[in-house]
Image (cartoon, rainbow, N blue to C red; front, top):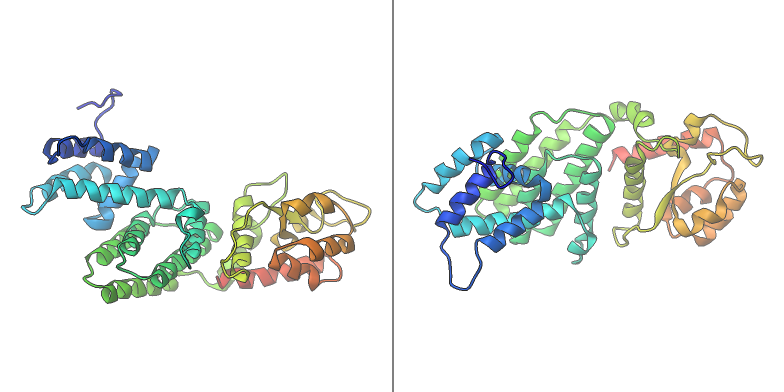
Length: 348
């Protein structure tokens, strides 16, 4: 009834006991111990959550406390195999690690970098409700049951939906976990690639229908996309939004590293600039990505000097476009760019 730390056994502890008791062992191989250690390492402090996502993606969406009971039901079936179950849990734990701790070098085949960008974005939004579906999608792709095109399409709509609905609109996620887990199982149970792709097409339609309108999106931008050195709460979200647009311009061919946020109109008042209010300075319309190597060079210099340096030295297409298309910078320009960004970001 208690684990090594003196706490009540979790469903994962109970399932472990059953696996270890019934696992078919082979001489000179330290299994199931090795695999179980790796499962715990891959899921780290989220191992119980991982079990829930794993179970929802294949079997049934249930609460944590009911998983062990459901496991016993499955294990009592004549075709249940403990070795296969452990192998499935092990493989999905590796997928879960790719979801919760995205690394670009996990996605280095032609066209896969787009997958990394989407997984990284979902972590920025701090959204866990889609994890059962993400596990199912990546599992099907790794097993070559869905194409890279369909994986990318599905991750793109999940990213877009949660950026709009959660990150910008602060919408609730109630009901989504049930919907996502049902889609996960439909995907798992579909018999061929065509059927699995149809499940994804249906999922994309459902999420598109749930998107907020552009007007709803627009009303929340000022409250969600801002940044100053004294007000950093939304910094990661602003970086995501601007990086996403840059990635599109770069066709997802370059990983954005050593990039900082730059205020075109400087945070600290300088005689080179006309004084304006803080709400405009921290507004996303006044923010651009900038190569860190250039940031220290331009400081509070007047606009024309910033413009010259950036156009000559920056590698960032979206940033260079701003300076190439504006001969000066003021409140009107900030508002104009903000409205342009709203259109681009809503259309992601």
